[in-house]
Length: 178
Image (cartoon, rainbow, N blue to C red; front, top):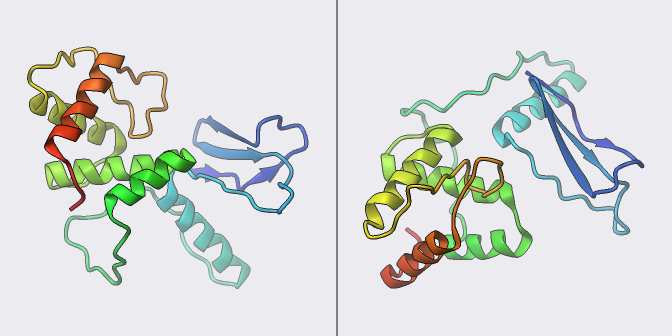
């Protein structure tokens, strides 16, 4: 898999444009903002991090193999763990900044909690959708489609009534973080 690093372009009208083609992920960004900062979401954060590590290692004369995207094995040794903000605070920040990558990460974690196993985005979407169907037995979710956890995607479908029922269910059950 080949990954182009960030490329700044004066022709970009939008602040950020994602292009995906074949085996390549590419981000095109408009010139720097006045404060010089850029917030760039990455579609495959683990792979991107591994790619950057390989790149920086090469700059220091260390050759590492090409990163391979995989799901972590069930039995791994945790070297370090960092406790995050409570889920409700994370979700508030996700909504405030419209952070689609974080929405997908929360979605992947939700599926992992529900199924007790890590899985790719497509399978996790199906697991969460099935959970909604079991939890909302009096709601017609036959047309409800989750392509991913961010809601972005041409296949995602949810009606206003379905969304309302999901929000009502969350409010009535007082879902909280774990």
